[in-house]
Image (cartoon, rainbow, N blue to C red; front, side, top):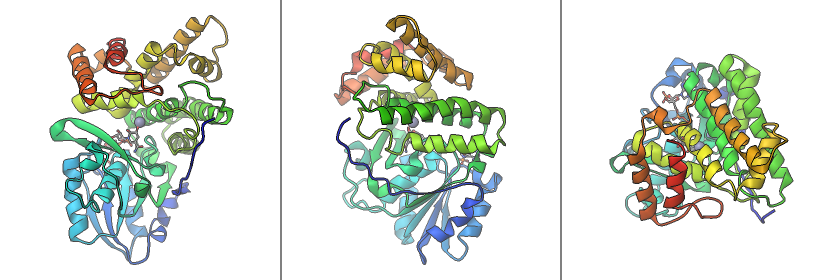
Length: 384
Ligand code: NZQ
Ligand code: ZN
């Protein structure tokens, strides 16, 4: 196992009815900007629960944060934070609202020009407005991590930044929010969480059986509980297990002390930037291609995944790898997510554009930093 440091200060408040504790966890006298998305929180009662809990606080609201949150939208909130002297940001929504709120938090305190630099130049975040989150969609893990992914529409660019300063002070996870999720968003959440685990697991062995078992436990739980939620959205116990799996998939624990990949995400972000395909769907397209093209480098872990998650215990190494790829893609398809580019009307010209971008950026990705434009072409051509 590699050396590592692990610190996760996010307070998790989990369970039905717990949204009522929102106000109690916000500093007394705080001036709050409540951020939200396209309005789902008004239909499912989450807004009413939050508002009842923050009674007595001064609250300004900022809605309209879109999926794959846009820099252009968020900068309007940054102006409000500055003008109104906001001291606390309360994110009420899914990963996009929370990621957007993390950017607002950092951008409002950024003193060295255009805050886009935090993303484009990895400019350090030195200060941020404190954040609390009421999560309405289990998928990204943003509720318990330091990451945020922001899109700049005018450049068709989708970039990430990380800072411990934007980790929420608390995140409220009430599984009942899942009851109102459309099927598509449940599927997206299952697949995004699954691939978060894979990015920290499907690399090469470093003798870290505890992280491996954590990872396999989350993967198994997602494959068992995810379909139950799809079949019955009001199944509270399955919703709770899905929600907690999703948080645990990307809160730093399973990735501590082990190599990490993230190539599926890096390539997937380009598919969203160019075509607006939902984040999780891009991952379902790219991952089987990565497993195929990087099969030698990942051989030991692909075989371990096949054996421990999909029950594949016989055959030659190549046969086992092929079956593991098939089972993984089959699982994505089984929860309603197509895994081929053609299903999204994306053709070879997009592959050229993505490879061009990686050529210009000049860096290589993957756990061994050996996936460059040539490999990315092969990975995506495998998915046509
Ligand atoms: O906007 P509203 O009206 O709230 O509707 C949303 C949105 O249309 C709806 N929704 C959310 N909760 C609901 C609900 N509808 C009914 N009932 C509820 N309880 O779902 C739609 C999608 O929401 P969004 O927040 O975009 O989904 P998700 O949580 O999957 O977030 C995706 C974003 O997170 C980024 C992705 O790139 C993408 O931009 N990621 C963030 C990560 C992180 N911070 O660590 C890691 C991930 O890999 C990912 O990249
Ligand atoms: Zn993701």
